[in-house]
Length: 419
Image (spheres, rainbow, N blue to C red):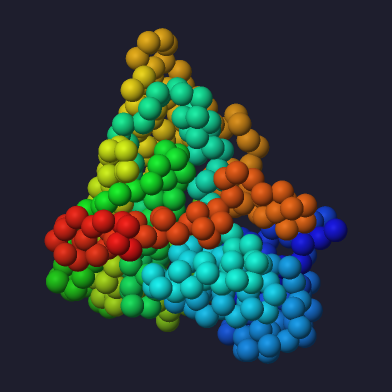
């Protein structure tokens, strides 16, 4: 038996990640319908995943008003469309695989949660970090008591200078009015994983951060509006678009992020996209307004403290964590896939997470494991303890909403319960 899935939003995540899982699980998953305003993307869904042409919709209304075609609707659109499509899909009979964030609006998140209960739908939010071997090993260590009772955590997400420029300056998530505040869009992942690791609830938060670099006032002298227009800084600017994207091609990468510019990346097509599309813009002349660095302090209900930092000014796209407990400490580096266990009484231990799985593709192996557990839930009725239901996901969103309000109010402490 196969789980039938409709993909709503056939961009990088919908088409190239979740639909591609059909090839990973050919005996358990079938892509049966697709919705996207871009006819080219729908043609690719037909060619790559054999979606029937009559079940490809540029207009979502006929899809939602017609008969229920699938078990699950995978919603991978831009953030502001999540609410409308989630509500229509649940009413039409679909369970949901919903990209994070649930919605950029708190009340819409709550309405989706309520509708999930009203219509008796599974709504699985794509907090893929929970499904990675790295974080699951950390969870196992904490449950075993390797650090004792958790007292304090230091966690960071280095977004990576190139990822910041690609996604949050030039790309789809650059402007919070069009999508979400960055602390919600990027870091609800991190808040979810911190809640899950500790098994504790958050009492209050405070936050600071702003947009430091990527604005017109910091543009180098003589910089044109586009990197392809003969920038005098092209040999020294780390954000020079042709050097970065063509460099990815030269290294043999034809997937993300290059395939966001053009679905069939070649040197000629990438250069054309840079000349005419958003990804060729100078990073100092974009319509971005999301922060490029932010720190959040969390106080948990039992007094445990957590400090989390998100920063776009790192060379690597990496998450690191240090967990300090009453009996020892744990440190982890997701880029290296290494965990260090340092008990106060006993020998230190280094764990190579690379030996724990043979598949670390897609968010450190999280994408594949997420889909595996969704298939188990829908086809076999088996819900894993860590599966990210909408009920579990909500607290991570409340923390993000509170953190953003705190940031806008100069770091004022926010009670999460108020959200």
